[in-house]
Amino acid sequence: MFNIIILLLVLIFSKNTYASLKINEVYPAPIPGEYEWVEIYNDENTIIDLSQYSLYDLTNKKIKFTNTILQPLSFEIATSSGVLNNDGDTLSLKNNLGEIIEIATYSASFDSTKTYAKCPDFNGNWFILNLSTKNDSNETACQSLTPIPTLTITPTLTIVPTEGTENPSPTESLSYNNIYISEAMINPLIGEKEWVEIYNDNDFSLMIWKIPDLPQRYFL
Image (tube, rainbow, N blue to C red):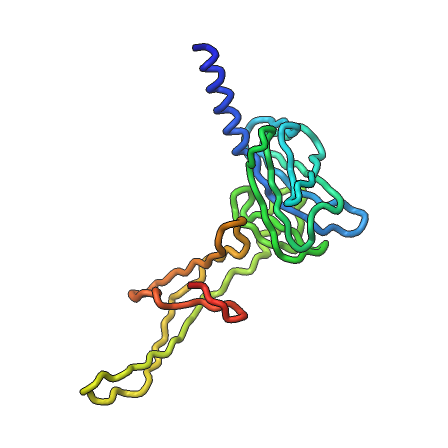
């Protein structure tokens, strides 16, 4: 009975510890002579032994932690040279059992002026920012994000007469306001879909509407 209780405590502790580690920022394209780096955050009030964790890129190359002990509510940096791709990669944070704790994927083209970070920190969405915040909160850099403007759509309604009815008035133009793009996921995890979130503050359905991107491909 005592052994069972100890085992349960170990499992509970391990689960909480794993959940507390977050990939918070990625800097894949440093200036020549400097290291690439990945920022990890411990969002629990416990010390974490990073020797029990590993960070890999998509080709299973290792990014090494600078220190082995991560203090509570603190940042740690893992560095590499020539490992992270400047035009896209996937990072996997794993425990000593090989279980994936967190994944971060980026696909845009990076240079030394850009970083890939969560806004807000730790549990937010990923964004490309023009200011790196190594070993610190992303709050300042996240303030530079430009909000997506309100979407105003003016569709054209064409009335087609049915047989036996008089010709209707010419094409009528209706203006619909209060339709907003509130969020977009442009870089999902492998196997998941991109998506755009729309808020419709009107009393009609958007079920037959489409959203084209720049090359006129549609979100349905």
